[in-house]
Length: 87
Image 1 (cartoon, one colour):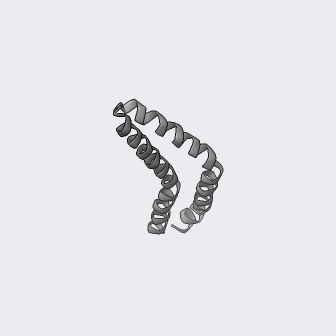
Image 2 (cartoon, rainbow, N blue to C red):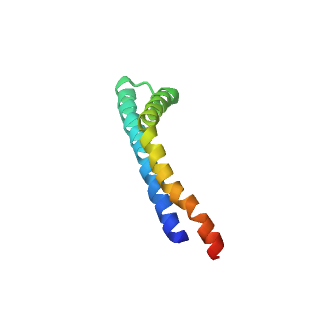
Image 3 (cartoon, helix red, strand yellow):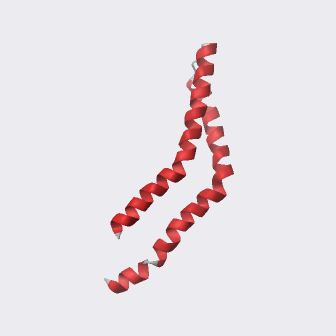
């Protein structure tokens, strides 16, 4: 049972973190190309757009992210009493 929960938790973490990481990666790529073209290499210029884009993606995907999370934790929490009584 623990192995199944662990596998599902890892799958869920990849599912929830994937879109945010892709958004940060694409934003970093676009900003990096822009910095290369302008020869302006400041770390702050690269970090601020990434933070803004990831924040916007979180706001847009928040209902879906919470739904996935609740869909995982609800059955997990409901199964605790049966595990305690059975153990």
